[in-house]
Amino acid sequence: MKRIHKVAVLGAGTMGARIAAHFANAGVPSYLLDIVPPDADGAARNKIAAAGLEAAKKSKPAAFFKPELARLVTIGNFEDDLKHLGEVDWIIEAVVENLEIKRALLKKVEAIRKPGTIVSTNTSGLPVAKIAEGFSDDFRKSWLGTHFFNPPRYMRLLETIPTPETDPAAIEAVAGFESDRGSALQDGRKINLNLRNAQSEFRGAARQVGDPGGSECSFGRRAAEVNAGSAEVAALGHRNLHASLGEREGQRCSGLSSADDE
Ligand SMILES: NC(=O)c1ccc[n+]([C@@H]2O[C@H](COP(=O)([O-])OP(=O)(O)OC[C@H]3O[C@@H](n4cnc5c(N)ncnc54)[C@H](O)[C@@H]3O)[C@@H](O)[C@H]2O)c1
Image (tube, rainbow, N blue to C red; front, side):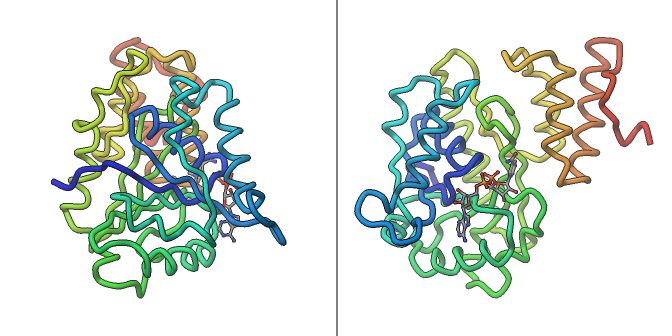
């Protein structure tokens, strides 16, 4: 099975910076890249990625288990640093939710990545296969959706969205990441970078919600909110949260609609 030793996160916004932070929590170094601001020179060319990393360092609740883990995140930009993509095992695209912007960036990635490098998108709602339409066979075999939820450290679920063309080995590599790194319990709590499917992830999430983020019901509502762009997953997630929470609490959470309610 392909092992994940180093990753690149493309886009240092709300999600990208915090995804990189959570990889750092699991002990995995990353490149965190973003666009170059107009007319920027020197260090200012990394200004947007730097701002994203700073925001992650200051975010509340904390994105990093420990502040010093930020050293595992190397910032850069899409013009000067795409060459580093040849060093990584998994590239996670988390730029703005725009099909053409994602495709244009990924075309550059396609030219640079090593064959077999996993490439995934954090899209909330764009069709995953369509983003890579017309890309090389090797790219499409290594391509899938990996939908982290906000904030990644606290939303302990990850939706995996293979396309019909995704090589099972790529899914296995991503899914195997938890067994590889999940024991890195740096704050005594299990990291869920686990990738099964939405259904089991939501069940897992419902089981694990002894989280500082709040009660199980508030966790469920949060999951419902962040899933607003993915109706099918949201319906599945709500149903499973209800099933899990209902069994445990003997009650339903108000404000959490579910497919069972409709
Ligand atoms: N915010 C959420 O709660 C959330 C949750 C799950 C998934 N997502 C998905 O994650 C992805 C990123 O969302 P976000 O909330 O982090 O967005 P964001 O706006 O915070 O960050 C997007 C990043 O894209 C960069 N960008 C802007 N124009 C660009 C261009 N032309 N080329 C390349 N990069 C460009 C920006 O500089 C920015 O850093 C989206 O696909 C979104 O749907 C978001």
